[in-house]
Length: 118
Image 1 (cartoon, one colour):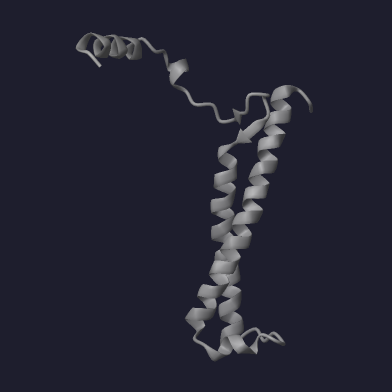
Image 2 (cartoon, rainbow, N blue to C red; image 1 turned 30 degrees about the vertical axis):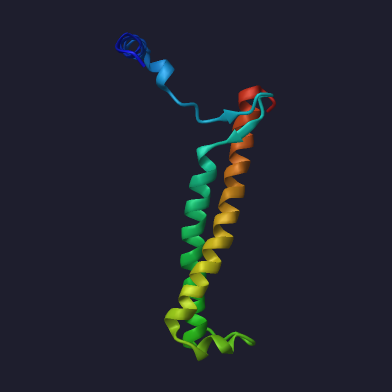
């Protein structure tokens, strides 16, 4: 790229308005259908954290014997930390999946409102 082309590109970038620099929150495919919304990532993050903490705490309670559940006595064979970690991993996976589905639902509701379908 020559110096003149570089200066022209800088000049074009400086003439952009704020409206040109905004990123939409609803990305669409060429046919106009929704593809991604930030609510999907936020839902997966919060669902994973909440699900992991809740299931991890429940697994710790079962392993410690505070909450006896028939058939889960083998969790007490290891340490409480291992059971809590296993519960956190499983809970965060399921919670993240549920949270992302909630985010997808939110994306489609916004899309329907945007298109005037509601």
